[in-house]
Length: 338
Image 1 (cartoon, rainbow, N blue to C red):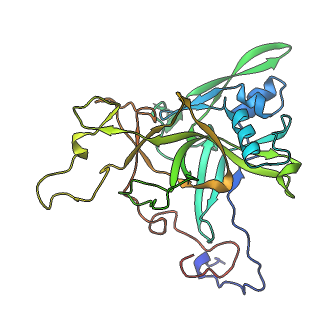
Image 2: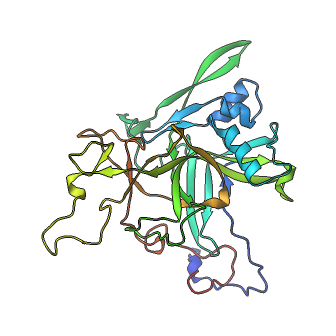
Image 3: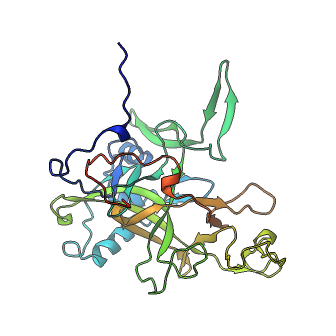
């Protein structure tokens, strides 16, 4: 006898008094899974500590960025000092668990915002279009995706050999609060002053330390900081001249006269006293992922955050695009607007 399928949205919500509200907080996912850094340090007989991870430096690359963890130890020391955790000194031997992504929730609501991913291996399959460095190769019956390979040192019988593993890469750009945003800041597509800034995830991880409260741990991401590029006229000297399609059309009625950044705000790496800027964020500080668009270099298909990416200004509400919001698993009656 066939069972009739019942959609979750058709199920009645239990009485909220019988099901207490669940606290929706951003949380690191994939902490028990495989990770290239875990395998590399394990092969070298080293513990997963901030210093050992930092020594791996650039451990992966994507078309958008080189994934660099060299600043992890310094960034954690800065976070501990700024937030006065324990005695304000980061414990050098604190154990770290490496994750793959952060589960995001919209603050104060029951709305699941999906994941912010920062991991070189995505469950053995692509999550979106194949990266530019992959290729398709036909087989007898189907097509098999071939991936960029990463050589890892593995000790066998007292000697070190190269053990080749395959990886797919995805490291998302995310928004987080600016912290010292001006009082008149707004986040509209034409706004000049913003309440947020952006960064590209380099690593998702959890730190185990008794000083982090009753739970004894906290989830973090290491991001490389981004800032808005300085634009100039198409024929003016500068790194980011405006393209002809970004100029306003002078014919009345053919253009939005109030629009700024017609292709979206252009972001690049933030320069901190002539050096790259890195920062550790607690998972709850990550607002959401950002849809970025390449700014192609000339007539090539080359692009990167270094040469500039656009923050897409034309987005549907998360309620109007898949994955569509389902009933919250905490079974609590959501208030209007939740």
